[in-house]
Length: 333
Picture (tube, rainbow, N blue to C red):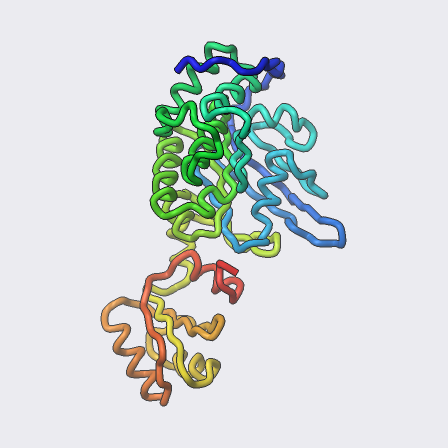
């Protein structure tokens, strides 16, 4: 797309990157304690395999963003170790930065230049020659369906477009590992689906991706494996399917009553086929084996106990179900 250069960039001299046959993320006892003794991340042990989309799932304040901050050298750990793409991010942060792409929660695009120039200058900063940076910027615009916005000012972009530009910029220098912190927060459903599609395409080409999210559907749809965090601790780690199976139920019935919640829980535990009953914020979750005839049986049993149900719904176990089982609170808290 041949855009004119508006500023001179001195390319950063690229350090020689050692061969790393296993381009993965590894943490061991990774810990971050802030002033006042606030432990944001507490002894985190993770291994992210090459070519997978790995999700950190949890509510706000769980430690997801701090974890990404340490892995991308923006936050200095209090303890433990972290290796990204074969590089110790604590001992060699400058080298690690060359091997990662980062998309943060906030819009970090340069508002003083155009969309195309944001991409071009990113490539130059990471050591690309002018011709390679121009070509890479043009290819990225086409791939991310932004060619018609090449000359646009950043402030004129929608939230979804800006997010696509940030993802395009983050992979322009072809990093082996891509970090996305709450990549679809604040996006409308259409923009969220479009970004999911793009991330799936990148991963299909072998891109390793670590993303944080509190959207259970996002983690379920995109991630090969998911780690569930809360209060800086790792609560569970497995494939979304395995995590949902760990609930030990095929169906979850959610109900509210005008009676005592604890009494309703105790009564529903007596129903045949129930594997677990839990109350969260006044809503009773009844986990049951099987699918057929579940709702009529639950209603009849509640009525038998003298409970008048005010709300009733049925669903299958989700990652949020897993989280509630582990913590007793809603994933969106």
